[in-house]
Image 1 (cartoon, one colour):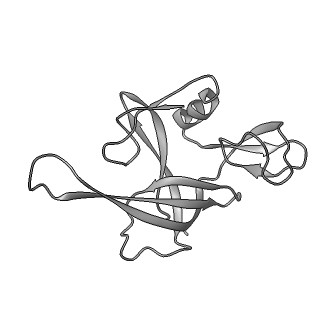
Image 2 (cartoon, helix red, strand yellow):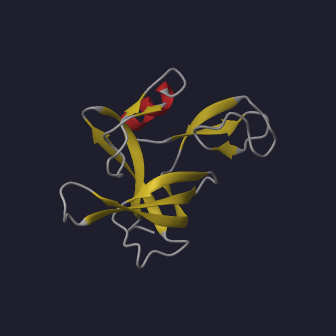
Image 3 (tube, helix red, strand yellow):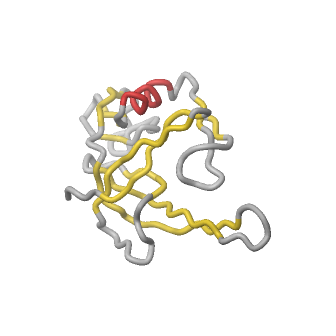
Length: 145
């Protein structure tokens, strides 16, 4: 996956370009869901970019859809001053989300106030689309949790 400039919630946000290894991942996002990997050897659920199972070191996987929900583990705020002199700084919240299936993912966190955000906050995946980039997932409030 190559990153240049245009979509994830970060400013400036990267543009994601597919390659052979990421095609199934981006096809799933286009279809509206996130793909995870399940280790064929022992059934452990792994992150989409896993090359080997972190639990058993298996390297054979099958793709499975994620529920798209989880909790915030940790987060930080990226401050950037964009545009002309005197412009207000832009803030982007980034964090690590533990999916209900178990894997941890890095992601932009949208619609969440960093001043009131807490570890364990329930979140739900959203897919952000851009005309000049592949879609990307972000996580926002899970209002149904």
